[in-house]
Length: 382
Image (tube, rainbow, N blue to C red):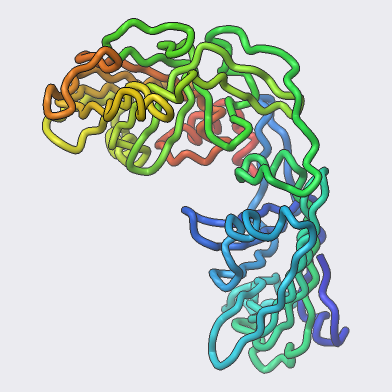
């Protein structure tokens, strides 16, 4: 990263040298491109990386098209790029930089606002290179009379293919196959590369019993494929998890992509339940709790609608400094979908989220970060 332009103007900024750049390409499914420069970073004994507060931030707000759309439509074709220009007062983005000579009673940083952004993306089997050239138009904070118009901000970031896989971008041009290198032993996921799937979802130790006889095609566990959202959880049992050469995991899928359990309670609900206590329990009854699909996909054409709504559900949470155990049990509603050979009437499930996974994926559950700081106190002394 660098600034180009009038040296006398650039001298007003204490442009930092950085050890790493943090990249965020979306937030909750929306476009929100931002890049944070960090001067210090460290690896803790548990393998997690820690950084101090960023020295600068490049924020493109919502002006750049969503990365998920670009990846889907353009990146498989190779190189792509575009230029954005501002008309009127539309804000395209900004960079905040520390001032070389801050005033005692004012902010030590100032923002350069952009009126033009030239963004280029070059993809190859090893990853994606993002190059940004942004032109400054105005300054906010510091000496607002400083003639910053025409200063150019240059930023080049390389995202390796593993990082793109975690962003669920797997259709890159010339992508090299990620071969299997072994199988994870049963109930051994706590220390298995955070349980991250090749498509960005999670794998956890757990099981689902839907009141019928499981088999190797529709197993109860001992692993589950997990989709965690703010207000819902999706669970699918699997009996085998393969390790890929990249370090990602690939759960064996049931023959007919089922049964799939959806609970309409998610991370936000778990966080509220655990706000002041380490254990919590609720029981809910009625419609909208969730459902199970006994065997989905191709079997839906053969057997018809196999979705069974949950009639009542008891949910128990148990938090320790090492992780979170989630247990549920209840019954399915004997309503219009009826019982079938593929869907039972009883429901039991459980899964475990280790602390390392919670922190590495940024899952907003209370007090896990504080637990880690007590275990590694030097992390909080930056």
